[in-house]
Image (cartoon, rainbow, N blue to C red; front, side):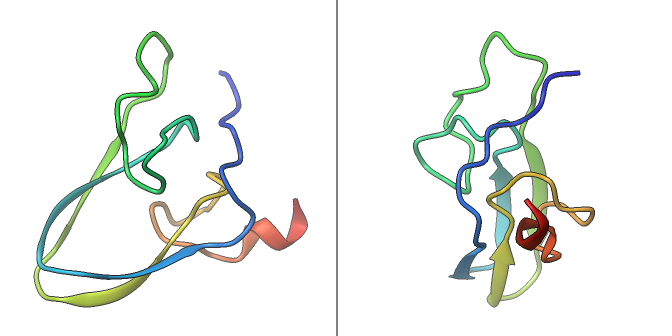
Length: 78
């Protein structure tokens, strides 16, 4: 399996409304941390996640989190 591109070595801390979002797993999206279709032609697919209420989240941008799409601090070791 290919390795994702590290988009950034810090999380994207965002306040998001309730809804469904698509987190970029490949690191190629120009709309980080969300998918814009940059994975086309690769083995990567976006990861859907849903929020049931407005919430501040820290979304992983290094793409190596063990709790995707949320940051778990693994970027510190990269």
